[in-house]
Length: 125
Image (tube, rainbow, N blue to C red):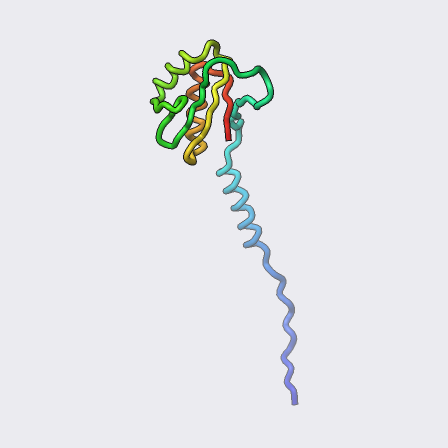
């Protein structure tokens, strides 16, 4: 009546392709990642350190330009004007990103100010 075929042995799953993919991903991420020290942003925290003194030094960082106390300036003019407004390199300079300025632009301005000798930068939200 019933014809039963002979039972086949169960196949075990082959894990070799999955292991190969895992090792390839491991090698890829090891080669694609960067090892080393990340750059830190040396910023002053409000409420710590010395108080603010002297004339206002508010630098607005826009995606296309810079403004010091509301006056549009290029980078060299900004450095010259900040040198005139500060008495010492430790004087606070307030940086304020505007109009959704990219973070890389803010960092570039901070690096320029740092290279010019200004050591106390305060970043506003």
